[in-house]
Image (cartoon, rainbow, N blue to C red; front, side, top):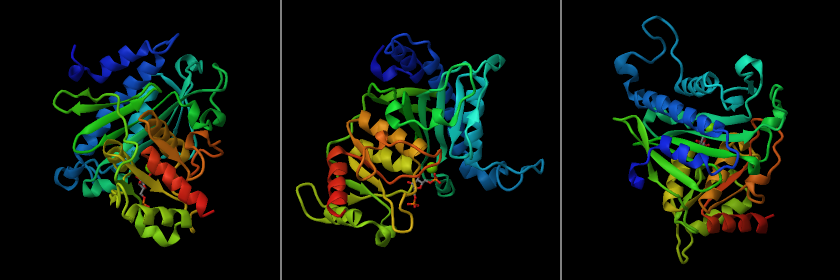
Length: 335
Ligand code: AHM
Ligand code: MG
């Protein structure tokens, strides 16, 4: 079969043999994510019908409160994974604490935990801007046969078994890695099938786009201010172009394809930044490294940071290797 006809389902089965002693659990987990992504995609695409169909809004015709789309996405991913008995635990941006999943016969026998932001950038839905799902998968470290513990989720990013994102944009794409390169699949909505459209994705060593919310400029640390000035100065490949959607998945997806850097730094009023280490920064760090890029908190490799909290925030610099290295140099010089 020619490459352009490979479906995500076929690809997952083909890749199962990449792992010695594979039991097929990771493949089943990826298949569940694929299913949940299709359900969420369909719902997100109906979001424009909010006031017309009456199927959303404050109340539906039964007088029940309608769910917000981020809550809907959270429920779909959690229910799909629970119903298929694949993971032993889930942590989500939408839930204060992690969820322990006992599994069949309460045997606690599943080995993977999943962390996710089910619908990142959901405030953009009202204005028809792309949003996305981000996920990260680890082997549990607690013994099989026991309930999961917080330590199963508080692992360094280097331990990730797989990570990916779904972008609900002008088309829906699922991009993921299991540590052997990065591949992207585009959903054909007529068939409800993801096809391999972006095999072996790579990010340029140096791009021309910088993405940061410059409205917060005054609050930024000196190193970030210096780097922004560097981006704007004339040079070999500069000035760079500023592009900022304010939707993490869309901003990083664009920079991945075109080459660029995404920055959400710490600031005077929020030194830890905004983005979450475990289900936003670590998965994107794994993804970008697999594409040949780099992810840092300005000083340290994101994936080597020891997490302390489920919803921990961290400054985030992510994208083309040279650009992140240059930004780190500015941070170091301004220290
Ligand atoms: P969310 O997880 O509450 O949706 O917030 C995360 C979003 C990212 O998608 C985006 O990159 C960032 O927040 C934008 O923040 P800001 O508006 O401060 O620039
Ligand atoms: Mg988020």
